[in-house]
Structure formats: structure tokens, C-alpha cells
Length: 157
Image 1 (spheres, rainbow, N blue to C red):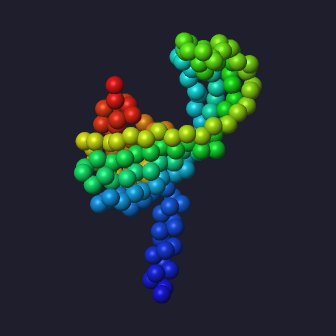
Image 2: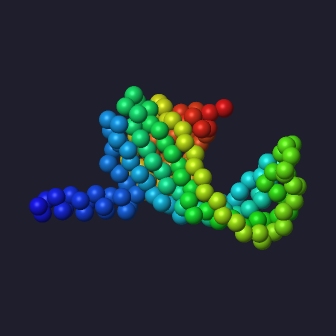
Image 3: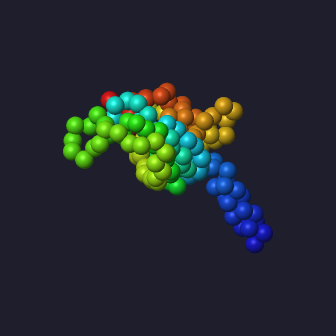
């Protein structure tokens, strides 16, 4: 009975620190949340808001040498910087060209893709200098991928 309790406690500690046991043979690991903030780009290439959110990652071993990676953004808030709107250069209807500075709002979302041709290191976020607050930083730390690598389908051209 004590061994089971210790194993359950060790598993809880693993989840809290954001590290996981290797997702092998169809397993799934969870990382985060990592609280982060970033500038939010518009369709014109400039910044339209400052975002703050919790980023979490799920890595699932597909069992064929590839991994499904999902980056979740939750509890997101933004504050507009003005004057450009997020869709100012979008040619479709329903997009204004300006937005007032200081407008607050919320968001959540996710990005999902497949990692190929890589080695998985579930302890990568614990390494010195690792930055798992961004998807590119997570992919570099856990899979050794360079920014915008074609080994992650969401960033393939």
C-alpha cells in the first residue's frame, strides 16, 4: 500500500513540474502551463496588441517515429497598442483598419501538428537555458528543432 501511495505522489510531482515520462508506445506527455507574454502581430506585419497567456503542450507518440504536438493557449488576455487593427491588411470584409489603444479582451486557442525526423527528450524543458514559453522554444528544447523547421508540420512552407 505504501509503494502505491509513493508512486502516485511521484506522478503528481511530475505533472506539477511540467516534465513527463517518455511518451513511448502510444503514450502521451503533458508540459506546462508556462505563463508568457508576447506581442501580437497584425496582417500588415506590425503589432496590434500585447498578449498574456498560459501555454501548455501535449506530446503524443504516434508509434511510427512521429509525434503529435498540441500547444494550448488558455486564460489569454490582450491589450491593444493601436492604431493598427489585427486585420488591417486583410482584403476580406469585416476588418477595420484601426483600433484604439488600451482596449482589453480575452482569447484561447491551440496549434497542433506532427513532428517528424527528430529525437524526443521529455526532460528538454528542464535543461539550462531552455525556453518552453513559446512553441518554437518548446520544439527546440524537447525535439532539438531549429525555428521554423520543416520537421513540424504547422511550420512547413
